[in-house]
Image (cartoon, rainbow, N blue to C red; front, side, top):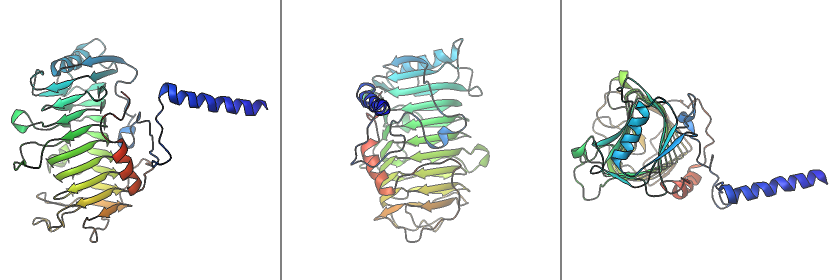
Length: 366
């Protein structure tokens, strides 16, 4: 009788904690989502010591770009420059209320010196970057979460929503929304990438984001020179919608594309070049690719391939993907690469439903 009473007590305590603490619940009608509390990154950002950002440290709030940049710079110059710091963005960051044409997460001593242990998080649904981007320079253990970043013009800067560069590592980009405009915009160079990963950056996870209405979506590696190659990047449970190409463009790196939902990609999606290896696992592709033959490489423009100008192909391992109105009969694996961590992947159809329900801002409780 005592053992039964103890069991009942713990069950009751757990139920109360759900309502009081706010443990997320996935309903019986919803496909199970690994790590549904969204508090810890999966994939490569979980390796190399993990990615915790500013967890457990000081908390600050920023309403303007100038305030946000000042908080970052002050922490870098302080007597405790590695102190964990979480910055909540509570309003709209713009060029007009910022001191520069981008927000830079960097050490004030220059890019040769790392900056560490920072989270930049949108509060509720109020955190927004309108026309201005975020650049991570030799940043280690950084989280960017719950932000709406959009319409970052090349005419007012580099045109990139988030740029991860100069040896940054252990970066988690999670539950954000990125977009510009593609319909009615005939200038594909008006904006650059939405999340670009460059210059020896590694151990990065990009998860539960929405990428929409954009020409050149994002890249991993900006040059055909292997000396600047990034590496070890996971993309999971992202929604890629109404895009033209580079979803993503990959050079040299090992990349895991798992449980993403691609919809209405006009030209081509995963573009693997220059020896890159990508494990394309349990993704849902709906109306992806033009089906035309790339004049440079001879590959059919579709979900996966080698497209455009780089002189060497990359490689892909295809497993468990679902294709709807997407050319795929010619697709076969060209490598057996799989990442060195375990990922409990959903089926492609379950991942599609999970992405529709849980991606973007306003999902995590911040």
